[in-house]
Image 1 (spheres, rainbow, N blue to C red):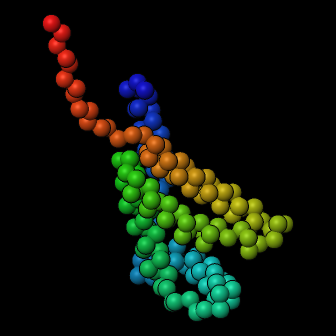
Image 2 (cartoon, rainbow, N blue to C red; image 1 turned 90 degrees about the horizontal axis):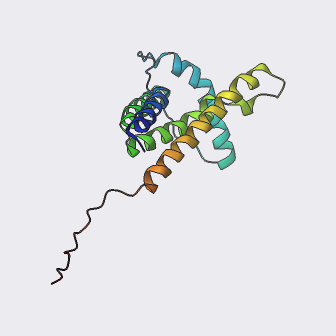
Image 3 (tube, rainbow, N blue to C red; image 1 turned 45 degrees about the vertical axis):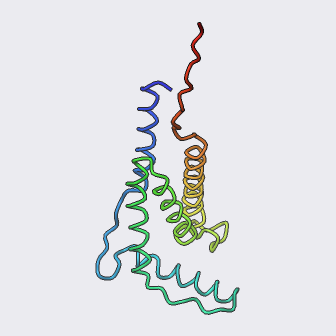
Length: 156
């Protein structure tokens, strides 16, 4: 690959990771994100406890919001520099937030909320797949190995 090809690939990765690097307003109450998550998180906790028959531990939504901000921020910054660890953090972020934020499955097909949430859900699934692709390609490329120099035999 030429040097210019690497520059374009790096720009693409930087543009992709910009999707992840942003920070919400996080006040004492967790900000607007916590206010949006409280009803959704309550529904998921009730669903899990009804299906498993176990009590779900009480998780403060502010801690969940803070965790997602840290995962998204740190993962995005590390991913900009090509770190696999950053990609894993972003995968964890998407695995936690996608079913919580984009709960299209709680709405009927003819409701407008369904059509607003489904594309966002599918975009998150696509980003998850792109991160898996990145990790797969990163693991396929062999790391630079030091080659032992074989001494040439001298002919007389």
